[in-house]
Length: 121
Image 1 (spheres, rainbow, N blue to C red):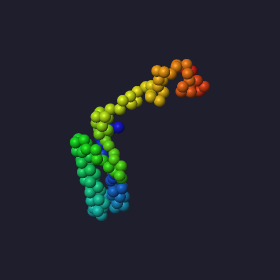
Image 2: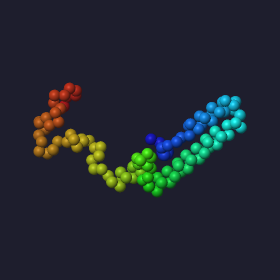
Image 3: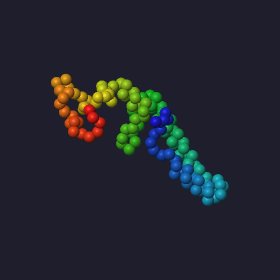
Image 4: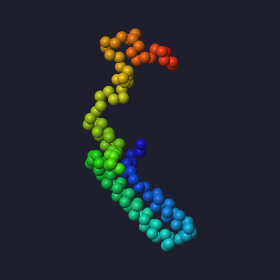
């Protein structure tokens, strides 16, 4: 994952493709393609503004990155949340599902592993 965070949404590829098609059609003469160029530059400025707003919100720690009704968080926001609210024993081996309780014998096959093929226990 890169350090650059950007909002999901438009990336101006359609506008750029339309501009390139127009330039190819008119043999790289930019006068007939002024509308396509303006559309592309408007898209770039909108995307730049959205990226800037997202970066400022991430610095403030605002948890608002909703897209299509779903909230999306940057990796910095997720790390801040995990630091504030740590999860005990998250990702530690042995996992809780395969932990032997003190009153269970080592000889008992409580996890049903004795008859499985593979590495011997």
